[in-house]
Amino acid sequence: MRAVDIIQKKREGKELTPEEITFMVRGYSEGNVPDYQVAAWAMAIYFQGMSAKETAQLTLEMAKSGDQIDLSPIAGVKVDKHSTGGVGDKTTLILAPMVAAAGVPVAKMSGRGLGHTGGTIDKLEAIAGYQVELPRETFIKQVNEIGVSLIGQSGNITPADKKLYALRDVTATVESIPLIASSVMSKKIAAGADAIVLDVKTGSGAFMKTLDDSIALAQAMVDIGTEVGRDTVAIISDMDQPLGHLIGNGLEVEEAIATLHGKGPEDLHELSMILGSHMVVLGKQATTTEEAREILEKTIADGSAFERLKQLVEAQGGDVAMVEDTAKLPHAAKRIEVLAENDGYVSSIEAESIGIAAMLLGAGRETKESVIDLAVGLDLRKKVADEVKKGDVLAILHVNDESRVEESKQRIIQAYQLSAEPVEEKPLVYAIVTKDGVQRFV
Image (cartoon, rainbow, N blue to C red; front, side):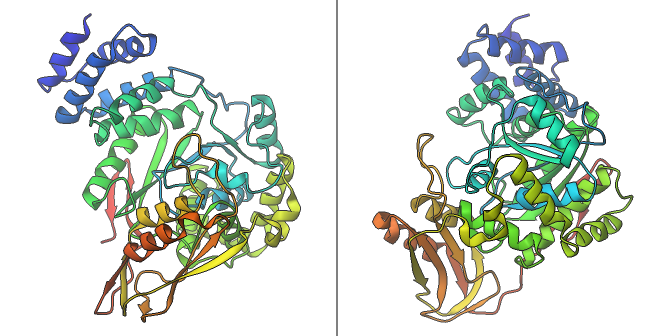
């Protein structure tokens, strides 16, 4: 078998055999197939696409390229959740304890943030003492005992995907649906999930800007799940504005805790309930999403979801006092207001610009080596459909280092799109994709 023949076959739009895909992925991982041939292969895939079977085979090969986590010692259906990335997206901090309180084991590995989004692991580190790395046996024992653990990704999960992603990044082949879908799903499969709920963002702050592209990506990932025997559901949710009001690591922990007390922003509560209810159904603790939602709302009302968060933090060495009293979380020294320069109604908030504004204050990483300031970030005071008068407070910056405040302010002012006419609120969820098809709500 030769790489050049496989490249040519895909260039001509033909379906590759599982053996040919294995040859390319393993060959690249082991250094037997050079960068330039894999780059040509990725470009052929970019133009010709892949069938569901090809994409599933690519996913499995990447999942097998490194550590595979065996979660079978944990009783019950292990359901994982993945978001394609959004600004202010702190749903994992709410879902993990809430879904665990509903009886579904949550054994979750999360990532750090690079660029404008903070990762779940960065957010958890705002809680002093929280151990993001646990030995495998401790991780499994903890989930069996309290139903939940949130840790950082092992360094050797899907190394073939990391290598291929770095190559795609510099060869203009990132925006290929089979390549994105296999990249996401390979990590979830390697992490040992039995079932997967995907939160696929759409809109200005998302990787996929249009609804059709977002649905196509969701379908590709659900198809992979079906091919490899993992029940998968995808929710297409709005990222034409950030989720909730607070952006920044410690601030997002604060907002997640408020949501677990039933006092969080409406959009964050609602999306957490929608994602959580699908997790509970896949976890076999309810037969319908309506029944699952009732169970989840009860965990908020009776305090059991918040109690589970405290157990999680305590089990992983974190300071529970910070969770019980959020005033003890890291807080920035200064508050600086960003004022509206015009009248109007908020039609959209460019989420990516808001993420960059937070990063400029130190809430995200500009380079891999950047050190995050866990206390800084933004509080958005106006959301889509709100009326704005000149001089109104659009946002409040939480600042320690003032060197880039003006730059951050300008990003926020540019991010707010104002309309002269009143604007309707955006839908929070546009569609749900399952193996049975697509249910659109707009």
